[in-house]
Image: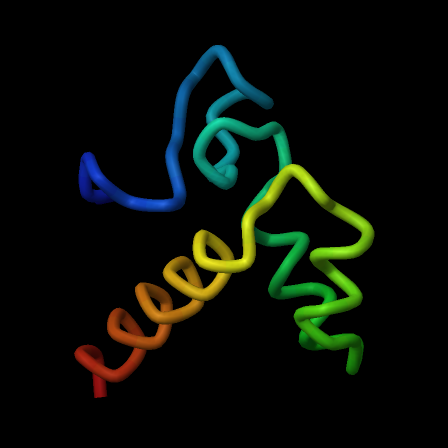
Length: 71
């Protein structure tokens, strides 16, 4: 479940419910794909200027918390 104040949101009317960064149509998965591919956060932010740095960092911190809490 995505918290209401999260930097990541799901809306069935936006990209068929794909989790996106709040107030954008940029999927969170895209950031994960960048990191997995060896690209930096700065490269992602340059390519997707509608995503503020603090929002991307908050999303990564949220994902980290979810992973660590499952260990």
